[in-house]
Length: 194
Image (cartoon, rainbow, N blue to C red; front, side, top):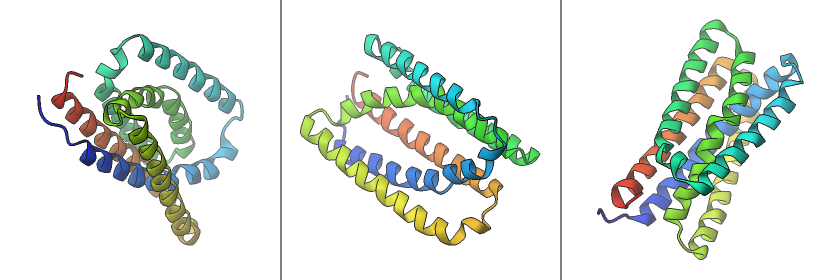
């Protein structure tokens, strides 16, 4: 068993929060704004229903077994592959509405599994209520700081950024987030009996 440096994992987790939130805030909301008028409005309630259903299903599975958690890296790699393939296809075909629709459905299914499993990772790193409370508050600070920074930057450059660049920024955010989460998962797995 390897000794796990939880302080280092905490710093990595917070760095991941800041960078990925910055990239997400600088891209996905603007992709949405630029494409929403061309999307059938019935898609949004369908996405909401699917998102909640998959969240309920994955949470119930996660409560009863470690099946999802043991396959955590597969979900992350699946999301990475999905976003890269989607971004390439949509950029080549200049179909950004399809990117937004596929992004919504990915958030319903793949991302829900990753989020549900993430609670077990946090449970391993932050095993006391005090450490979890400290993480939650720092995470909120890092996330909000990233959103503020991306909003300031977007205020000055959003008129000059095309959808292709926004899709690349958003995809980079997903890849970065998932690679860091895989790293943290592997560190925990190699250091304990996960």
